[in-house]
Length: 167
Image 1 (tube, rainbow, N blue to C red):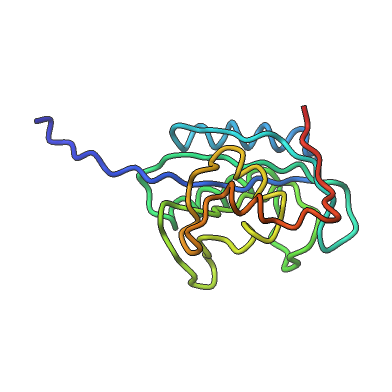
Image 2 (image 1 turned 90 degrees about the horizontal axis):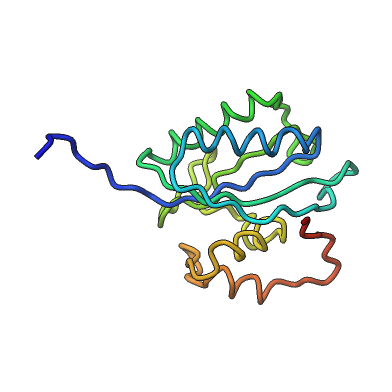
């Protein structure tokens, strides 16, 4: 026995979005995520109209990863990657941004402590989160509804959907 305890790995999902210098920030953020987390799986890239404000289109995708860190430590890493990419912490929820990294799911965890919400309610509200999530994790179950992400995407109202999968 080596004396080293293997910490349990948790599978998580990160929503990635950018509409300022997105051709630079999205690939750079993926490189940063690969340095911190294991077993990275990346969804297709989607172009999405800005939601809640007038602005340039966003590039969005979902990253699946494994980590032995707790959820708050993962969220702290994501915040630092955002800051490293020029993200400013203004108070407006709906605004242009260089990079937005949200931990949307982390294993079976259910957390809502004000600063950290897992699973994020954006999952079944926004196509730019749900479609790429259903693409890479169709059979995973939402920790609260216990529906698969494929089922949630099939049930999603796609009327007025302004989202395109990029090549």
